[in-house]
Length: 89
Image (cartoon, rainbow, N blue to C red; front, side, top):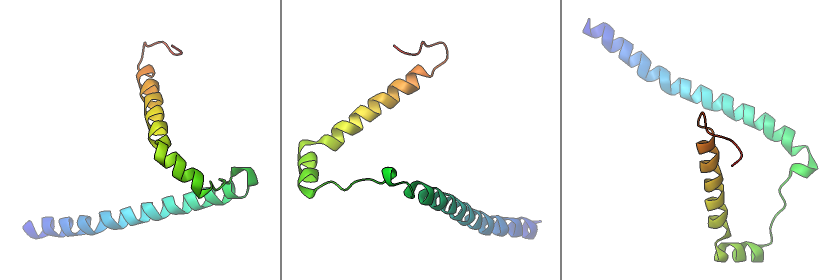
């Protein structure tokens, strides 16, 4: 009985990492197709910001401020998605 359980354990310990690799590969292929589709539209490309402006934005803490605002909006959305809570206030 121990030999059978050991064989099952060895098979499962080899199966799940290969399954993980398969799922990651499938997700990567899906995202590469979506990236190709979105990259074909010229309006969807991100413009490069001048290094002087990026230094200024980093020195003033703009990224931290945007992160705080995004976190507050996400918190508000999550709290308003609770049942019996009114939307829009």
